[in-house]
Amino acid sequence: MVSIFHHYADTDGEAAESPTLPLPPPQRQPVPPRYPIEGVTRLPLIYVRGFAGGTSGIDKQVDDPFYGFNDGSTHIRVGGDGNAQYYQFESPLLRLYAEDGYHPLMAGDPKAYLESCGAGTVDRATIWIHRFYDASADTFSKQATDFDIEAAARDLYELVQLVREKTGADKVDLIAHSMGGLICRSMLQKWSYEGLGDFRPTVPGKDLVDRLFTYGTPHGGITFAVGGGLLDEFMEDLGPVGSDIFSPETMYGYLVPGVEYRTEAPEGWQANRIPAEAFDPDRIFCLIGTDPGDYGMAQKVVGPQSDGLVAIRNASVEGAHRAYVHRSHSGRYGLVNSEEGYQNLRRFLFGRKRVAIELAGLEPCPPDAAGRRSFWQGELQLSVRGLPVVLHQQLAAHYCPVTLEPDPDGAPVPLTTVFLLDPLTMPADGTNTPVSPPSRYALHLRVSRLTEEHGLLFWRDHLAQTADWDDTLIVDVGHEADDPKGELRLWAAWNSQLPVAIADRNPVGDSPLDVERDAVSVPLPPSAGRLLGTDTALVLKPSVWE
Image (cartoon, rainbow, N blue to C red; front, side, top):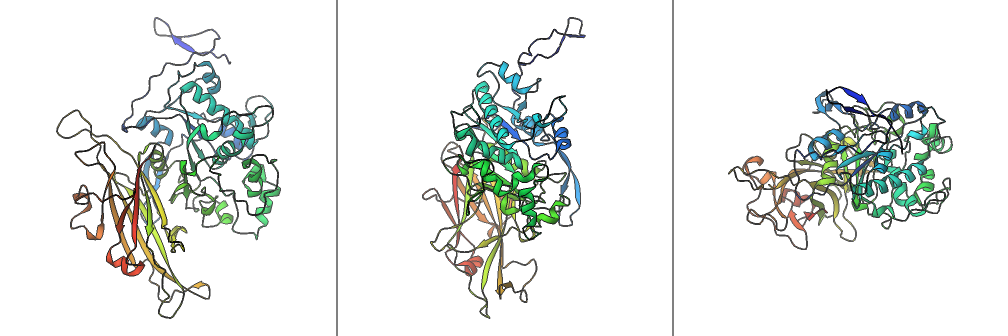
Protein backbone atom coordinates (compact mmCIF):
# COMPACT_ATOMS: atom_id res chain seq x y z
CA MET A 1 0.00 0.00 0.00
CA VAL A 2 1.27 3.44 -0.85
CA SER A 3 0.43 6.62 1.03
CA ILE A 4 0.02 9.85 -0.89
CA PHE A 5 -1.23 13.37 -0.16
CA HIS A 6 -4.55 14.36 -1.57
CA HIS A 7 -6.69 17.47 -1.30
CA TYR A 8 -10.22 18.11 -0.15
CA ALA A 9 -12.34 21.26 -0.05
CA ASP A 10 -12.98 22.76 3.38
CA THR A 11 -16.08 24.74 4.35
CA ASP A 12 -15.09 28.07 2.76
CA GLY A 13 -14.06 26.47 -0.54
CA GLU A 14 -10.28 26.61 -0.23
CA ALA A 15 -8.22 23.48 -0.66
CA ALA A 16 -6.54 22.04 2.41
CA GLU A 17 -3.93 19.33 2.56
CA SER A 18 -4.93 16.10 4.27
CA PRO A 19 -2.67 13.94 6.43
CA THR A 20 -0.64 11.17 4.81
CA LEU A 21 -3.29 8.50 4.42
CA PRO A 22 -4.04 5.70 1.97
CA LEU A 23 -6.01 7.12 -0.93
CA PRO A 24 -9.64 5.95 -0.75
CA PRO A 25 -11.17 4.72 -3.97
CA PRO A 26 -12.89 7.60 -5.77
CA GLN A 27 -16.65 7.10 -6.02
CA ARG A 28 -16.92 7.89 -9.71
CA GLN A 29 -20.20 7.20 -11.41
CA PRO A 30 -20.09 5.39 -14.75
CA VAL A 31 -20.29 7.73 -17.71
CA PRO A 32 -23.43 7.05 -19.77
CA PRO A 33 -22.58 6.04 -23.34
CA ARG A 34 -23.18 8.68 -25.99
CA TYR A 35 -24.19 6.00 -28.49
CA PRO A 36 -25.88 3.17 -26.56
CA ILE A 37 -25.37 -0.31 -27.95
CA GLU A 38 -27.99 -2.93 -27.25
CA GLY A 39 -27.04 -6.09 -25.39
CA VAL A 40 -23.33 -5.29 -24.96
CA THR A 41 -21.58 -6.20 -21.72
CA ARG A 42 -18.64 -3.85 -21.20
CA LEU A 43 -15.55 -5.68 -20.00
CA PRO A 44 -12.49 -3.94 -18.54
CA LEU A 45 -9.95 -2.93 -21.19
CA ILE A 46 -6.19 -3.25 -20.72
CA TYR A 47 -3.83 -1.47 -23.12
CA VAL A 48 -0.34 -2.84 -23.74
CA ARG A 49 2.09 -0.55 -25.57
CA GLY A 50 4.86 -1.36 -28.03
CA PHE A 51 8.65 -1.23 -28.07
CA ALA A 52 10.20 1.97 -26.66
CA GLY A 53 13.89 1.32 -27.46
CA GLY A 54 16.62 2.31 -25.01
CA THR A 55 16.48 4.11 -21.67
CA SER A 56 15.73 7.58 -23.09
CA GLY A 57 12.78 6.24 -25.06
CA ILE A 58 11.53 4.31 -22.04
CA ASP A 59 11.79 7.38 -19.81
CA LYS A 60 9.72 9.38 -22.27
CA GLN A 61 6.95 6.80 -22.35
CA VAL A 62 6.93 6.31 -18.57
CA ASP A 63 6.27 10.06 -18.14
CA ASP A 64 2.99 9.62 -20.04
CA PRO A 65 0.17 8.29 -17.79
CA PHE A 66 -1.39 6.61 -20.81
CA TYR A 67 1.82 5.22 -22.36
CA GLY A 68 1.03 6.94 -25.67
CA PHE A 69 -2.48 5.58 -26.18
CA ASN A 70 -4.06 8.99 -25.61
CA ASP A 71 -2.31 10.56 -28.61
CA GLY A 72 -4.66 11.94 -31.21
CA SER A 73 -3.97 13.41 -34.62
CA THR A 74 -5.08 16.19 -36.93
CA HIS A 75 -4.15 14.60 -40.26
CA ILE A 76 -5.85 12.16 -42.55
CA ARG A 77 -4.87 10.88 -45.98
CA VAL A 78 -7.64 11.44 -48.51
CA GLY A 79 -8.06 11.04 -52.23
CA GLY A 80 -5.46 9.80 -54.63
CA ASP A 81 -3.09 12.77 -54.58
CA GLY A 82 -1.40 11.78 -51.31
CA ASN A 83 -2.08 15.16 -49.71
CA ALA A 84 -3.26 15.30 -46.12
CA GLN A 85 -6.29 17.21 -44.91
CA TYR A 86 -7.30 18.40 -41.48
CA TYR A 87 -9.14 15.69 -39.56
CA GLN A 88 -9.30 15.79 -35.77
CA PHE A 89 -9.03 12.39 -34.12
CA GLU A 90 -9.26 12.62 -30.35
CA SER A 91 -7.44 9.33 -29.52
CA PRO A 92 -9.00 5.92 -28.94
CA LEU A 93 -9.03 6.38 -25.17
CA LEU A 94 -11.03 9.59 -25.36
CA ARG A 95 -13.40 8.09 -27.91
CA LEU A 96 -14.08 5.08 -25.67
CA TYR A 97 -14.75 7.50 -22.82
CA ALA A 98 -17.05 9.76 -24.82
CA GLU A 99 -18.92 7.19 -26.89
CA ASP A 100 -19.02 4.00 -24.84
CA GLY A 101 -18.99 5.06 -21.21
CA TYR A 102 -15.47 3.88 -20.37
CA HIS A 103 -13.19 5.85 -18.07
CA PRO A 104 -9.65 5.49 -16.73
CA LEU A 105 -9.16 5.56 -12.97
CA MET A 106 -6.07 7.58 -12.21
CA ALA A 107 -5.36 7.82 -8.48
CA GLY A 108 -1.68 7.48 -7.68
CA ASP A 109 -0.32 4.01 -8.28
CA PRO A 110 -3.02 2.13 -10.27
CA LYS A 111 -2.00 -1.23 -8.82
CA ALA A 112 -2.05 0.13 -5.26
CA TYR A 113 -5.41 1.74 -5.98
CA LEU A 114 -6.86 -1.59 -7.15
CA GLU A 115 -5.46 -3.38 -4.12
CA SER A 116 -7.17 -0.83 -1.85
CA CYS A 117 -10.58 -1.57 -3.39
CA GLY A 118 -12.94 -4.29 -2.30
CA ALA A 119 -13.77 -7.18 -4.57
CA GLY A 120 -16.40 -6.24 -7.14
CA THR A 121 -16.46 -2.54 -6.18
CA VAL A 122 -14.74 -1.09 -9.27
CA ASP A 123 -16.74 -0.22 -12.38
CA ARG A 124 -16.24 -2.74 -15.16
CA ALA A 125 -16.27 -0.06 -17.85
CA THR A 126 -12.74 1.03 -17.01
CA ILE A 127 -9.50 1.31 -18.94
CA TRP A 128 -6.14 0.24 -17.53
CA ILE A 129 -2.60 0.69 -18.80
CA HIS A 130 -0.11 -2.14 -18.35
CA ARG A 131 2.89 -0.09 -17.19
CA PHE A 132 5.49 -2.79 -17.66
CA TYR A 133 8.23 -0.32 -18.65
CA ASP A 134 8.25 1.52 -15.30
CA ALA A 135 10.85 -0.81 -13.79
CA SER A 136 13.18 -0.08 -16.74
CA ALA A 137 13.06 3.72 -16.35
CA ASP A 138 15.72 5.63 -14.44
CA THR A 139 13.45 8.55 -13.56
CA PHE A 140 12.29 7.06 -10.25
CA SER A 141 15.67 7.61 -8.49
CA LYS A 142 16.41 3.91 -8.44
CA GLN A 143 18.44 1.44 -10.40
CA ALA A 144 16.63 0.63 -13.63
CA THR A 145 16.28 -3.02 -14.58
CA ASP A 146 16.69 -4.39 -18.08
CA PHE A 147 13.44 -4.94 -19.92
CA ASP A 148 12.36 -8.58 -20.01
CA ILE A 149 9.40 -9.62 -22.14
CA GLU A 150 8.52 -12.65 -20.01
CA ALA A 151 8.57 -10.52 -16.87
CA ALA A 152 6.18 -8.14 -18.66
CA ALA A 153 3.95 -11.12 -19.46
CA ARG A 154 4.01 -12.17 -15.80
CA ASP A 155 3.06 -8.66 -14.67
CA LEU A 156 0.27 -8.58 -17.23
CA TYR A 157 -1.14 -11.82 -15.82
CA GLU A 158 -1.14 -10.34 -12.32
CA LEU A 159 -2.80 -7.13 -13.55
CA VAL A 160 -5.51 -9.11 -15.36
CA GLN A 161 -6.25 -11.12 -12.23
CA LEU A 162 -6.36 -7.98 -10.09
CA VAL A 163 -8.68 -6.13 -12.48
CA ARG A 164 -10.99 -9.15 -12.67
CA GLU A 165 -11.19 -9.47 -8.90
CA LYS A 166 -11.89 -5.81 -8.22
CA THR A 167 -14.39 -5.31 -11.05
CA GLY A 168 -16.11 -8.66 -10.71
CA ALA A 169 -15.70 -9.27 -14.45
CA ASP A 170 -15.14 -12.83 -15.61
CA LYS A 171 -12.72 -11.70 -18.32
CA VAL A 172 -10.97 -8.64 -19.74
CA ASP A 173 -10.22 -7.46 -23.26
CA LEU A 174 -6.62 -6.76 -24.29
CA ILE A 175 -5.66 -4.04 -26.78
CA ALA A 176 -2.05 -3.97 -27.89
CA HIS A 177 0.23 -2.07 -30.24
CA SER A 178 3.26 -3.70 -31.88
CA MET A 179 5.38 -5.53 -29.26
CA GLY A 180 2.48 -5.27 -26.82
CA GLY A 181 0.73 -8.00 -28.79
CA LEU A 182 3.71 -10.31 -28.23
CA ILE A 183 3.57 -9.61 -24.48
CA CYS A 184 -0.10 -10.61 -24.57
CA ARG A 185 0.69 -13.75 -26.52
CA SER A 186 3.52 -14.68 -24.16
CA MET A 187 1.08 -14.42 -21.26
CA LEU A 188 -1.64 -16.38 -23.05
CA GLN A 189 0.51 -19.06 -24.69
CA LYS A 190 3.35 -19.63 -22.23
CA TRP A 191 3.44 -17.74 -18.99
CA SER A 192 -0.14 -18.47 -17.85
CA TYR A 193 0.72 -22.17 -18.04
CA GLU A 194 4.17 -22.36 -16.51
CA GLY A 195 4.90 -19.08 -14.71
CA LEU A 196 8.28 -17.79 -13.59
CA GLY A 197 10.28 -18.38 -10.43
CA ASP A 198 8.23 -19.59 -7.48
CA PHE A 199 4.93 -18.23 -8.79
CA ARG A 200 2.75 -20.62 -10.75
CA PRO A 201 -0.51 -19.42 -12.29
CA THR A 202 -3.64 -21.37 -11.45
CA VAL A 203 -5.89 -20.14 -14.26
CA PRO A 204 -4.89 -20.30 -17.96
CA GLY A 205 -4.97 -17.06 -19.90
CA LYS A 206 -7.79 -18.19 -22.18
CA ASP A 207 -10.09 -18.22 -19.14
CA LEU A 208 -9.10 -14.65 -18.23
CA VAL A 209 -9.15 -12.87 -21.61
CA ASP A 210 -12.17 -12.59 -23.88
CA ARG A 211 -10.73 -10.76 -26.92
CA LEU A 212 -7.35 -9.60 -28.14
CA PHE A 213 -7.00 -6.70 -30.62
CA THR A 214 -3.56 -5.91 -32.03
CA TYR A 215 -2.31 -2.91 -34.01
CA GLY A 216 0.68 -3.70 -36.22
CA THR A 217 2.00 -6.53 -34.02
CA PRO A 218 4.87 -8.50 -35.64
CA HIS A 219 3.23 -11.86 -34.98
CA GLY A 220 5.61 -13.47 -37.44
CA GLY A 221 8.61 -11.44 -36.30
CA ILE A 222 10.39 -8.56 -38.01
CA THR A 223 12.35 -9.47 -41.10
CA PHE A 224 14.12 -7.35 -43.68
CA ALA A 225 13.67 -7.17 -47.43
CA VAL A 226 17.30 -6.20 -48.09
CA GLY A 227 20.67 -7.38 -46.89
CA GLY A 228 20.57 -10.99 -48.07
CA GLY A 229 19.68 -12.21 -44.57
CA LEU A 230 22.56 -10.33 -42.89
CA LEU A 231 20.20 -7.80 -41.31
CA ASP A 232 18.05 -10.60 -39.92
CA GLU A 233 21.12 -12.18 -38.32
CA PHE A 234 22.13 -8.78 -36.95
CA MET A 235 18.70 -8.41 -35.34
CA GLU A 236 18.92 -11.90 -33.83
CA ASP A 237 22.52 -11.83 -32.60
CA LEU A 238 23.10 -8.22 -31.57
CA GLY A 239 19.61 -6.88 -31.03
CA PRO A 240 20.08 -3.11 -30.98
CA VAL A 241 18.63 -1.87 -27.64
CA GLY A 242 16.77 -5.14 -27.12
CA SER A 243 15.13 -5.42 -30.52
CA ASP A 244 16.29 -9.03 -30.85
CA ILE A 245 12.96 -10.01 -29.26
CA PHE A 246 11.42 -9.56 -32.73
CA SER A 247 13.56 -12.28 -34.26
CA PRO A 248 11.43 -15.38 -34.95
CA GLU A 249 14.24 -17.43 -33.39
CA THR A 250 13.97 -15.50 -30.12
CA MET A 251 10.16 -15.53 -30.18
CA TYR A 252 10.16 -19.31 -29.86
CA GLY A 253 11.62 -19.02 -26.36
CA TYR A 254 8.93 -16.74 -24.94
CA LEU A 255 5.91 -18.16 -26.79
CA VAL A 256 6.29 -21.91 -26.24
CA PRO A 257 5.75 -23.49 -22.78
CA GLY A 258 8.57 -25.55 -21.33
CA VAL A 259 11.22 -23.87 -23.49
CA GLU A 260 14.16 -21.83 -22.23
CA TYR A 261 14.12 -18.19 -23.35
CA ARG A 262 17.06 -18.41 -25.78
CA THR A 263 16.27 -21.85 -27.16
CA GLU A 264 16.68 -22.05 -30.93
CA ALA A 265 13.42 -22.60 -32.80
CA PRO A 266 13.08 -25.97 -34.58
CA GLU A 267 12.77 -26.04 -38.33
CA GLY A 268 9.23 -25.45 -39.50
CA TRP A 269 8.04 -23.66 -36.36
CA GLN A 270 5.84 -20.70 -37.26
CA ALA A 271 5.73 -17.75 -34.91
CA ASN A 272 2.32 -16.52 -36.07
CA ARG A 273 0.46 -19.67 -35.00
CA ILE A 274 -1.39 -19.80 -31.68
CA PRO A 275 -2.40 -23.28 -30.51
CA ALA A 276 -6.18 -23.45 -30.25
CA GLU A 277 -5.88 -24.91 -26.77
CA ALA A 278 -3.99 -21.80 -25.64
CA PHE A 279 -6.36 -19.21 -27.14
CA ASP A 280 -9.05 -19.28 -29.82
CA PRO A 281 -7.86 -17.35 -32.92
CA ASP A 282 -11.50 -16.46 -33.54
CA ARG A 283 -11.22 -14.12 -30.53
CA ILE A 284 -8.30 -12.21 -32.09
CA PHE A 285 -8.40 -9.26 -34.50
CA CYS A 286 -5.22 -8.06 -36.23
CA LEU A 287 -5.10 -4.58 -37.75
CA ILE A 288 -2.50 -4.56 -40.53
CA GLY A 289 -0.90 -1.41 -41.88
CA THR A 290 -0.01 -1.16 -45.56
CA ASP A 291 1.58 2.30 -45.79
CA PRO A 292 5.37 2.23 -45.27
CA GLY A 293 6.02 5.73 -46.58
CA ASP A 294 5.30 7.63 -43.37
CA TYR A 295 7.51 5.64 -41.03
CA GLY A 296 10.95 6.98 -41.84
CA MET A 297 14.17 5.16 -42.71
CA ALA A 298 13.07 1.76 -41.39
CA GLN A 299 10.83 1.24 -44.39
CA LYS A 300 13.90 1.37 -46.64
CA VAL A 301 15.11 -1.95 -45.25
CA VAL A 302 11.79 -3.57 -44.34
CA GLY A 303 10.43 -3.03 -47.84
CA PRO A 304 7.25 -1.68 -49.44
CA GLN A 305 5.06 -4.63 -48.41
CA SER A 306 4.86 -3.37 -44.84
CA ASP A 307 3.65 -0.64 -42.50
CA GLY A 308 7.20 0.73 -42.48
CA LEU A 309 8.39 -1.67 -39.76
CA VAL A 310 6.32 -4.85 -39.84
CA ALA A 311 5.89 -6.80 -43.08
CA ILE A 312 2.27 -7.31 -44.10
CA ARG A 313 2.73 -11.09 -44.08
CA ASN A 314 3.98 -10.99 -40.48
CA ALA A 315 1.30 -8.74 -38.96
CA SER A 316 -1.42 -11.30 -38.29
CA VAL A 317 -2.11 -14.54 -36.45
CA GLU A 318 -3.09 -17.54 -38.51
CA GLY A 319 -6.87 -17.95 -38.37
CA ALA A 320 -7.51 -14.57 -36.73
CA HIS A 321 -9.75 -11.83 -38.07
CA ARG A 322 -7.92 -9.05 -39.83
CA ALA A 323 -8.30 -5.75 -41.59
CA TYR A 324 -5.83 -4.07 -43.93
CA VAL A 325 -5.74 -0.27 -43.74
CA HIS A 326 -3.44 2.18 -45.53
CA ARG A 327 -1.70 3.41 -42.40
CA SER A 328 1.85 3.25 -41.08
CA HIS A 329 3.19 1.56 -37.95
CA SER A 330 3.01 4.72 -35.82
CA GLY A 331 3.31 8.49 -36.08
CA ARG A 332 0.82 11.09 -37.23
CA TYR A 333 -0.53 8.69 -39.85
CA GLY A 334 -0.17 5.64 -37.62
CA LEU A 335 -2.50 2.74 -36.92
CA VAL A 336 -3.34 3.56 -33.29
CA ASN A 337 -4.36 7.19 -33.78
CA SER A 338 -6.46 6.49 -36.86
CA GLU A 339 -10.17 6.50 -37.51
CA GLU A 340 -9.82 3.17 -39.32
CA GLY A 341 -8.15 1.60 -36.30
CA TYR A 342 -10.70 2.91 -33.82
CA GLN A 343 -13.74 1.91 -35.86
CA ASN A 344 -12.40 -1.63 -36.36
CA LEU A 345 -11.61 -1.84 -32.63
CA ARG A 346 -15.04 -0.62 -31.59
CA ARG A 347 -16.87 -3.06 -33.83
CA PHE A 348 -14.74 -6.02 -32.77
CA LEU A 349 -15.33 -5.26 -29.08
CA PHE A 350 -18.97 -4.19 -29.17
CA GLY A 351 -20.46 -5.25 -32.51
CA ARG A 352 -22.99 -8.03 -31.94
CA LYS A 353 -23.57 -8.79 -35.62
CA ARG A 354 -20.93 -10.31 -37.82
CA VAL A 355 -20.93 -11.70 -41.33
CA ALA A 356 -18.20 -13.96 -42.69
CA ILE A 357 -17.78 -13.51 -46.46
CA GLU A 358 -16.46 -16.21 -48.80
CA LEU A 359 -16.25 -16.76 -52.55
CA ALA A 360 -17.60 -20.15 -53.63
CA GLY A 361 -17.82 -21.99 -56.95
CA LEU A 362 -14.73 -20.32 -58.42
CA GLU A 363 -13.44 -22.02 -61.57
CA PRO A 364 -9.74 -22.08 -62.58
CA CYS A 365 -8.63 -19.17 -64.69
CA PRO A 366 -8.06 -20.46 -68.25
CA PRO A 367 -4.87 -19.67 -70.18
CA ASP A 368 -4.94 -16.66 -72.44
CA ALA A 369 -5.29 -16.94 -76.23
CA ALA A 370 -1.55 -17.62 -76.57
CA GLY A 371 -1.63 -20.42 -73.99
CA ARG A 372 0.11 -18.45 -71.25
CA ARG A 373 -0.73 -19.26 -67.61
CA SER A 374 -3.23 -16.82 -66.16
CA PHE A 375 -4.81 -16.24 -62.75
CA TRP A 376 -7.44 -14.02 -61.20
CA GLN A 377 -6.40 -11.26 -58.83
CA GLY A 378 -9.03 -9.75 -56.56
CA GLU A 379 -9.15 -6.39 -54.81
CA LEU A 380 -11.71 -5.58 -52.15
CA GLN A 381 -12.82 -2.68 -50.01
CA LEU A 382 -15.22 -2.84 -47.07
CA SER A 383 -17.28 0.22 -46.12
CA VAL A 384 -19.87 0.64 -43.36
CA ARG A 385 -22.72 3.13 -43.53
CA GLY A 386 -22.10 6.34 -41.61
CA LEU A 387 -18.31 6.16 -41.48
CA PRO A 388 -15.92 8.52 -43.31
CA VAL A 389 -13.27 5.85 -43.88
CA VAL A 390 -12.87 2.43 -45.49
CA LEU A 391 -12.54 -0.23 -42.78
CA HIS A 392 -10.66 -2.79 -44.84
CA GLN A 393 -8.96 -2.68 -48.22
CA GLN A 394 -6.76 -5.13 -50.03
CA LEU A 395 -5.43 -3.44 -53.14
CA ALA A 396 -2.67 -4.24 -55.61
CA ALA A 397 -1.38 -0.68 -55.14
CA HIS A 398 -0.89 -1.48 -51.43
CA TYR A 399 0.82 -4.83 -52.15
CA CYS A 400 -1.92 -6.94 -50.57
CA PRO A 401 -4.44 -8.10 -53.22
CA VAL A 402 -6.22 -11.44 -52.98
CA THR A 403 -5.14 -14.23 -55.30
CA LEU A 404 -8.31 -16.03 -56.36
CA GLU A 405 -7.35 -19.66 -56.82
CA PRO A 406 -9.97 -22.42 -56.48
CA ASP A 407 -9.33 -24.88 -53.67
CA PRO A 408 -8.55 -28.44 -54.89
CA ASP A 409 -11.10 -29.77 -52.39
CA GLY A 410 -13.73 -27.26 -53.39
CA ALA A 411 -13.56 -25.13 -50.23
CA PRO A 412 -14.65 -21.49 -50.65
CA VAL A 413 -12.06 -18.71 -50.77
CA PRO A 414 -12.31 -16.69 -47.51
CA LEU A 415 -12.44 -12.94 -48.14
CA THR A 416 -13.15 -11.12 -44.88
CA THR A 417 -15.46 -10.84 -41.87
CA VAL A 418 -17.43 -7.69 -41.13
CA PHE A 419 -18.38 -6.79 -37.55
CA LEU A 420 -21.35 -4.46 -37.15
CA LEU A 421 -22.67 -2.35 -34.30
CA ASP A 422 -26.31 -2.45 -33.32
CA PRO A 423 -27.05 1.14 -32.20
CA LEU A 424 -30.42 2.09 -30.82
CA THR A 425 -32.27 5.05 -32.26
CA MET A 426 -35.47 6.78 -31.21
CA PRO A 427 -38.31 6.34 -33.69
CA ALA A 428 -39.70 9.31 -35.59
CA ASP A 429 -43.24 8.74 -34.27
CA GLY A 430 -42.23 10.10 -30.87
CA THR A 431 -42.73 6.90 -28.90
CA ASN A 432 -40.27 5.99 -26.18
CA THR A 433 -39.48 2.54 -27.52
CA PRO A 434 -36.04 2.56 -29.20
CA VAL A 435 -35.57 0.64 -32.39
CA SER A 436 -32.50 -0.94 -33.97
CA PRO A 437 -32.23 -0.15 -37.69
CA PRO A 438 -30.46 -2.54 -40.05
CA SER A 439 -26.70 -2.20 -40.29
CA ARG A 440 -25.46 -1.62 -43.83
CA TYR A 441 -22.12 -2.43 -45.37
CA ALA A 442 -20.74 -2.47 -48.89
CA LEU A 443 -18.18 -4.87 -50.33
CA HIS A 444 -16.46 -3.45 -53.41
CA LEU A 445 -14.90 -6.18 -55.56
CA ARG A 446 -12.55 -5.83 -58.52
CA VAL A 447 -11.22 -8.81 -60.45
CA SER A 448 -8.42 -8.68 -63.00
CA ARG A 449 -6.76 -11.40 -65.03
CA LEU A 450 -2.97 -11.49 -64.85
CA THR A 451 -0.86 -13.52 -67.25
CA GLU A 452 2.57 -15.07 -66.73
CA GLU A 453 5.28 -15.82 -69.25
CA HIS A 454 8.52 -17.50 -68.12
CA GLY A 455 7.52 -16.88 -64.51
CA LEU A 456 7.06 -13.13 -65.02
CA LEU A 457 3.92 -11.09 -65.44
CA PHE A 458 3.09 -10.41 -69.10
CA TRP A 459 1.93 -6.80 -69.58
CA ARG A 460 1.47 -6.42 -73.34
CA ASP A 461 -2.31 -6.77 -73.15
CA HIS A 462 -2.63 -5.06 -69.76
CA LEU A 463 -4.79 -1.95 -69.21
CA ALA A 464 -3.62 -0.12 -66.08
CA GLN A 465 -6.29 0.48 -63.40
CA THR A 466 -8.87 -1.39 -65.50
CA ALA A 467 -10.52 -4.45 -64.01
CA ASP A 468 -12.14 -7.24 -65.99
CA TRP A 469 -15.07 -7.05 -63.57
CA ASP A 470 -15.95 -4.42 -60.98
CA ASP A 471 -19.05 -4.19 -58.79
CA THR A 472 -20.24 -3.52 -55.23
CA LEU A 473 -22.51 -5.69 -53.11
CA ILE A 474 -24.72 -3.72 -50.71
CA VAL A 475 -25.89 -5.71 -47.67
CA ASP A 476 -28.34 -4.82 -44.89
CA VAL A 477 -28.15 -6.90 -41.72
CA GLY A 478 -30.98 -6.70 -39.20
CA HIS A 479 -34.37 -8.07 -38.24
CA GLU A 480 -37.83 -8.12 -39.73
CA ALA A 481 -39.84 -5.03 -38.78
CA ASP A 482 -42.45 -7.18 -37.02
CA ASP A 483 -39.86 -9.39 -35.28
CA PRO A 484 -37.11 -7.10 -33.82
CA LYS A 485 -35.77 -9.86 -31.56
CA GLY A 486 -35.87 -12.66 -34.10
CA GLU A 487 -33.15 -14.23 -36.22
CA LEU A 488 -30.77 -12.08 -38.23
CA ARG A 489 -31.95 -11.33 -41.74
CA LEU A 490 -29.94 -10.19 -44.74
CA TRP A 491 -31.01 -8.09 -47.70
CA ALA A 492 -28.50 -7.74 -50.54
CA ALA A 493 -28.23 -6.27 -54.03
CA TRP A 494 -25.45 -5.57 -56.51
CA ASN A 495 -25.01 -1.87 -57.16
CA SER A 496 -25.03 -2.43 -60.92
CA GLN A 497 -28.53 -3.92 -60.63
CA LEU A 498 -30.11 -1.24 -58.44
CA PRO A 499 -32.59 0.95 -60.36
CA VAL A 500 -32.13 3.88 -57.95
CA ALA A 501 -29.42 5.42 -55.78
CA ILE A 502 -28.22 3.21 -52.93
CA ALA A 503 -29.53 5.55 -50.22
CA ASP A 504 -33.03 5.42 -51.73
CA ARG A 505 -33.47 1.73 -50.91
CA ASN A 506 -33.85 0.78 -47.25
CA PRO A 507 -33.55 -2.13 -46.97
CA VAL A 508 -31.67 -2.57 -50.18
CA GLY A 509 -33.59 -5.68 -51.26
CA ASP A 510 -37.31 -6.27 -51.71
CA SER A 511 -37.27 -9.24 -49.34
CA PRO A 512 -34.73 -10.91 -47.04
CA LEU A 513 -32.54 -13.63 -48.44
CA ASP A 514 -33.20 -17.24 -47.51
CA VAL A 515 -30.78 -18.49 -44.88
CA GLU A 516 -29.92 -22.16 -45.31
CA ARG A 517 -27.57 -23.87 -42.90
CA ASP A 518 -26.57 -20.51 -41.42
CA ALA A 519 -25.41 -19.20 -44.81
CA VAL A 520 -26.73 -17.10 -47.68
CA SER A 521 -25.57 -17.52 -51.28
CA VAL A 522 -25.54 -14.40 -53.47
CA PRO A 523 -24.81 -15.19 -57.13
CA LEU A 524 -22.41 -12.87 -58.93
CA PRO A 525 -23.88 -10.78 -61.75
CA PRO A 526 -23.85 -12.51 -65.16
CA SER A 527 -20.90 -10.39 -66.30
CA ALA A 528 -18.79 -11.92 -63.52
CA GLY A 529 -20.18 -15.42 -63.94
CA ARG A 530 -18.97 -15.55 -67.53
CA LEU A 531 -15.41 -14.94 -66.25
CA LEU A 532 -15.20 -16.75 -62.91
CA GLY A 533 -17.74 -19.52 -63.46
CA THR A 534 -21.51 -19.61 -63.72
CA ASP A 535 -21.84 -21.10 -60.23
CA THR A 536 -19.59 -18.52 -58.55
CA ALA A 537 -21.28 -16.76 -55.66
CA LEU A 538 -20.54 -14.86 -52.49
CA VAL A 539 -21.44 -16.87 -49.41
CA LEU A 540 -22.50 -14.73 -46.43
CA LYS A 541 -22.55 -16.35 -43.00
CA PRO A 542 -24.37 -14.12 -40.48
CA SER A 543 -24.17 -14.75 -36.74
CA VAL A 544 -24.58 -13.02 -33.43
CA TRP A 545 -21.13 -12.30 -31.99
CA GLU A 546 -21.10 -13.11 -28.27
